[in-house]
Length: 153
Image 1: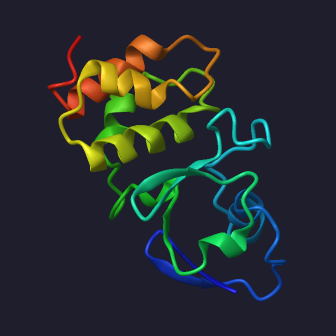
Image 2: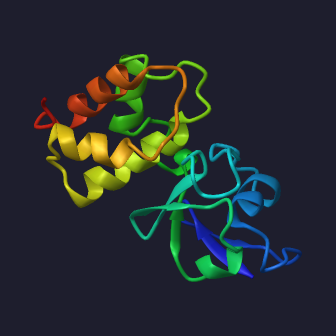
Image 3: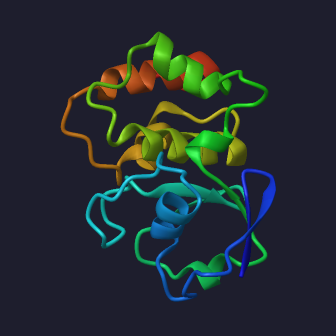
C-alpha cells in the first residue's frame, strides 16, 4: 500500500488496509499531530485534509485514502515556516491544552481553501463540530480574522 502524505509518496508494506488512517499516520508514519479523541469521528481531533477537504481519520480504513492527496497539520508548514493560519493561532494564543487545535486548524484551513473570505457565521459553522473544552474559541476566531479579514462579526 502507498499513500501520498504531505507531498511525499510513502510505502506502507506492513499495514493492514482495514487499519484506520489515524493509526497509520501516527504509528507507521510518525505524524502525531492528528489526535485520537473519540474514535467515532465525532470530536474532530483526528481531522486532516484529503484532496483539500477536511476529513476525519479515526474510523475510516487507510485503503479508502489510496491515490488521494493527504495533508496533516505537520504538512501545512513549508520550508520551516508556519502556514499563516498556524502563525495566527500562535500569535493569538489560541491553544491552551492544544489537543483539539490541530483538528481545528485543519478545519479552518479547509474552509479557507474553499472560501478565502468566509463570514464570521461560516467560520463558526465550520468549527462547530470540533470539541474544545479549554474555552479559547474567541482567540481562535481572532486567529481566523487575521488571515481572513472579512470574517467579522
